[in-house]
Image (cartoon, rainbow, N blue to C red; front, side, top):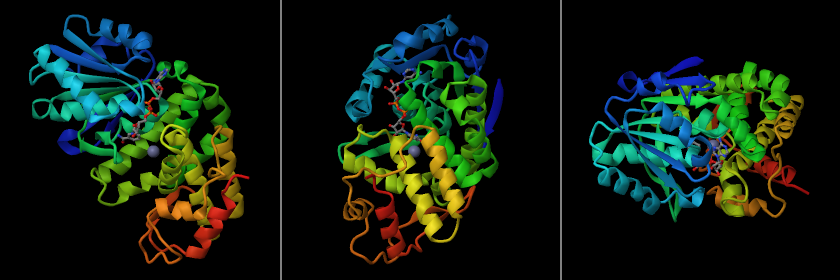
Length: 360
Ligand SMILES: NC(=O)c1ccc[n+]([C@@H]2O[C@H](COP(=O)([O-])OP(=O)(O)OC[C@H]3O[C@@H](n4cnc5c(N)ncnc54)[C@H](O)[C@@H]3O)[C@@H](O)[C@H]2O)c1
Ligand SMILES: [Zn+2]
């Protein structure tokens, strides 16, 4: 087992990465200060892993909330149901909420912990690659509103994160690839050495090799924890974590949420950001080719949907007409392994990127 620390002063917490953590009773209960626990999970994950966790919590008052599976249930209404359970089972201020699931469960549980009796402890047990490397680290919690994703929420840090690599064995291949998009992102924005490691180990990752996956999770969490420690509330540098996301969000919105997975849209978005970075002279043509090649080897898309026009992209990215006027801020590559946030974007080069990155 590996242990990392997210350094946030008195809100610092450990991330444990390894196998069989879910049944490690001593490790989990170390982070539970009262006698009450409420596990929040969903109806896909519960049949797979809930029993294991229940056994590890033997001796405590444990209640369970099983949410319906899917981003479309990440709503205030479904979320409010967690409080019905907590109140009916008389959970007090020393209770601990445990999120057992992917980013949807983690975001909803963390936000419930932030609000129940003005804040109770919570533990993250991420079950997807994306939630291990991204959503369970950094303290962003929340739910969606019909007018926008993650529009209601709070910054709220967990007591600890337990990333049990063995849980990834049941994850659908497409979800694994979507998580790899965020993993590749860390290599691009802040860790060139890791990018090279990914080039050498992508086949093992796709095949579900646990040692390789554990290393990728560790290195990703280290990179994210570093950025979050510098800028917990995204006043500045944390925005580099959004490489590919401005293009990606436009794709997600245009395609309707759910058709493209978030990681898939981010992959195409990173391909576009890399293309624009090359056109600006920041990276070589060979490096652009390497970025696209690595994304492809992770079974991720490198082109935007064929029916998306540059006009649509610009509208969804919040820029109109030909003039950008410094209104569009993008995360781009300054070099391989280093990202910058810039509003100095040439409209003609951006147009060339839209044209080059459209699927045939
Ligand atoms: N808080 C943050 O900083 C942050 C960062 C990135 C994403 N997010 C949020 O995370 C969510 C996406 O997270 P996600 O990609 O984990 O999606 P998800 O939680 O919807 O999980 C994806 C699918 O995999 C299933 N699943 C999960 N673990 C499994 C396992 N071990 N075996 C089999 N099936 C399993 C889930 O039930 C679901 O159907 C979005 O709501 C996004 O807004 C938050
Ligand atoms: Zn993302």
